[in-house]
Each structure stands twice: as structure tokens, then as C-alpha cells.
Image (tube, rainbow over all chains, first blue to last red; front, side, top):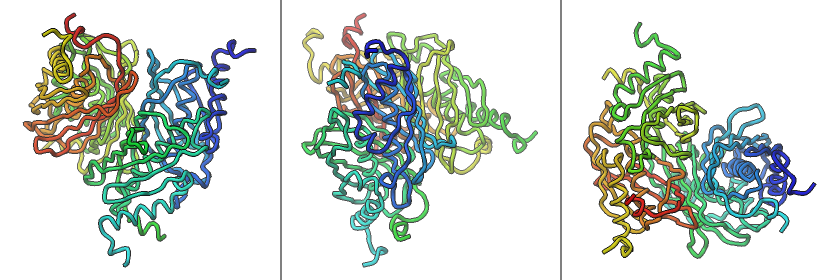
Length: 149
Length: 149
Length: 149
Length: 149
């Protein structure tokens, strides 16, 4: 089946797979793509020793990066490339070395060329770690063709 | 001279040095502390191959992490520990592999137990890369004693 | 029954009623309190002629004010006074003169002295108008005693 | 001189004047336009009795509305219409009945169809009241022609 025939969940997964394959930063951290659907993505990350401070607490930038990648997978899930204009994060609870985080990103709005996505970051037991909200802007081209180049 | 005798710029520098020494995440990326003063910090980072995507563009999470560390150095510069409650970032221009970013964080307000800090991220030629604003909250203890424990 | 005996929904409603009674700005616009529970509030507002521009589109500040009041009712619903530190709003769709907006505020987190609340603003048919997120900080005193003074 | 001949500061002033003339919400509050230049606007507002709570403290929505109008004047100052996508505000100090606020909005970035603007709200003595940052998106048409319709 060619890329042109992909739709819905299969297209979303193909877009996210291609993005993660290209994304050295996310792969270098160890971010795992668990699920992608149109307007949705779920990822996971185990906090490693290069992601913490001397008190074994994860750097806020690591939690942000996980949420930001999840936002990117969700807002590029329809094979239309989007770039982040702006994002904010509220930190709820500290994360420790070795903990596994789950990030779920959901489209809240997509109108014209702009969109709003919310990402929640939780521990595996469901406890809230951070809330992220991002604004994106659609640019020309496609996600999958971009991968081919 | 003991830690208790440090004031002003020397205290700010000692606090930032201790924080960076503990911060495996910032050191792992290669974030360099260039200057610390009360309510102020300036850092630098060269974008490396593990910080970019397949188009050699830096991950937004890397720019955020640089700004967030700079925010932390600036808001902990008086030996009073502060934690981030919330932060936002506006992305202005894309950054490429090999570029050197400069982040400058400045206290905008510090009242009671909360503060607001702005961080600007620029290229070496001064072009704006991102604007970051963080809200922090003072907790008990000290920055330098924390390091000793 | 005295104020001291109020708990749960009754206490939340009493706090919100007292706050709205004092709040000339919200009452001047016509904001109506529809429901208050612990960590939750729902309000409504009909867009009037002093809230719009020449194209009969509601000013973003009016939508923000509705969301901000709803945030205040929700985060003061346990008779512990909280002040807003920071808030952000994402505008999804324009609102016209005469439309009735519904705002629902929900606690996402309340830990130590800080909290995070989300407010969604919708039309009566459920269409999303704006997403608001606020950070609050608990101060001393009580909401209801404050009203008595 | 026709509208087509206006440039620079004169064009910025004409755009802001037309926007304020249409903006019943800003005029109803009493917002005054003090200056407009390309990418810049300065406004003022005296806090009146319908803008405060029972403790004579201005509603956060009023401060936001002042900042939001200033943002709008600044980002529409080149006769290219822009709409707000997102905005955030950090509250620094409370404002009392009768105080006069000054809001200054400045373009931080304008690239392609999106822009970032910062607005500072101060008392007349220069004390900081709030920091506002807004993201805008350029739509088709012109500001001044819109006024004619």
C-alpha cells in the first residue's frame, strides 16, 4: 500500500513514525511513541540519569520536551505539517530518576491554519506531573513527503 | 572566605555554579554559564547532533531547556531556592545544527514568595530565537546548603 | 445555620455568592453564577452592546473576564482565599453580540499553596469559544470572613 | 490627504483611532489612546467603580482588557489586520479604585503571518502592575478599509 492510500489512524501512525525517526532529540532521550490517531498521540519516557539534577529530580526541560514531541505528533497526524508558535507548561509534581512518564496529546481546536493542543503528562499510576498547551500553525507541504527527501 | 560571607554577584555566581554542577541535564546538553548576578543569568549552548531533527533544526524542547535553566539560575541567585510553577515560550525563528545560542534571564518581579522572569534566546548575532517567561515560587532552605547535603 | 457549619457544595456556593456580590466588575457585565462546587464553577454571560467592536464581535477582554471570574469562583470554593498569579487564554472562535456564553472552571491541581485551574468557554450549543488556564496562590484569611468586613 | 498616502506614525495613529472608534468595549471602560507608532501603542485607563471588587481592587479582567486593546492597536498599526490567537498575563501588583494605569505594547517579532507582542502595564509612577504577551495572526484585508464598511 502506498503512502497515498493511508488514512485515519494508519496515516497518523505513519506520520508520527516518520517524525520520530527523524527526531534525534526525542530518540536520544528515549521517547517512545505508543499510539497515534488523528489529532492524538501518546508517548512514554523513562527518566534517565542525564535528565535529572543532583537531587535526582527531572529537569523541567525534559518534561517539556516529552510534551512538546507529543504535541508535534498529534498536530502533524493528518499529514499536514504544523510548526509550534507558542507553548506553556504548568508543573504539578516533581519526577524522580527511573520513573516512567506518559504523555497524551489531544487536539482541542483546529481552524483555518492554526490549532490548539493540550498535553497531559502523568506517572504510570495516573498522577498528574504537568499540563502543557501548545499553539501551532500549518505550513505548506506534507509530513510524509518531507520524510522522503 | 566562607559561603556566609558571599553577597551580590559573588553569591549569585556561587549559587549558579552549584546548581549547574548538580544539573546533569544541563551539563549533558553542554549548557555553559556565562554570567550570574542577582536576578540575572546568561548562558550559552551550541546545538549538537542529538538536539536536532532530520532537517537539522533544533527541537523546541532544547531551546526551552536552555531558557528554563537560565530562569533557574536567575531566580535562585540570592541563595533562596525557588521552583518553577509555570512557564511559556514563543518560538520566533528556527535554529540549526552548530549554531550557538545565548540565553539571558532577567527578573521582572519578585514579591512575597513569587516571581516572574523573562528569558530571551538569541543567536550570537543578536537575532531573536525565542521568548520565555516563567513564574516561580520560593520554598524553604537555601541553594548553597542544599548543595552541601 | 452559621457559616461555620457549611461544607462541600453549600460552602462553595456561599463563597461564590459572596465573591460575586462584592465584584462590581462581574456584575456590571452581567455575569451570572450558575453553579459552584468544591474546585468547580459554572457561569454565563450574554454579550451586550458595550462588549463588542464595530463588527459586533465580542472583545477578547470580555471573554477573558468571564473566564477569570469563573476561575476565581472555582479556586476560592473551599473558603480559602486565592489570588491569580498568571493566566493564559487561547481564542478559538469569535463571539457575536447577543450570544450567551457558558464558562466552566475546573481544578486540575491544588498542592501546597498553589493551584492550576482550566476554564472552557463555549456557546450554548457547546461550540468552543476559548480555553483559559490560570495559576493561583493561596493567601491568609477566609473568603467568607472577608465578606463580613 | 487620503488614507492611501498615510505611512509610518500617521498610518499607525489612523489605524488605532479607527479601531478605538469601533471598539465599544474599550470606550465603555474609558481606555484612552495616547500614542501609536508602527509596532507600538500606549494607552491609559483610570480604574472606575464598575471595575473593582468590594475591596476596591481592580478585576484582573480589566487589566487584561487594557493590555489586550493595547496589543490590538500595536499589532494592527501597519494597516494589516491581525487577530489574537493567544495571550497570557502575569499579575504583579494589585490596582486600586481611582488609580491610572498606563499600558505600553511593543512588537517583539513579526514574521510571515504571525507576531509576538509584549505589553507592560504600570502605574503612573512606573510601578509594574502586569506583564502581558500576545500571539497574533494576520488575516486578509486592511484595517482602514474595514472601518469604512
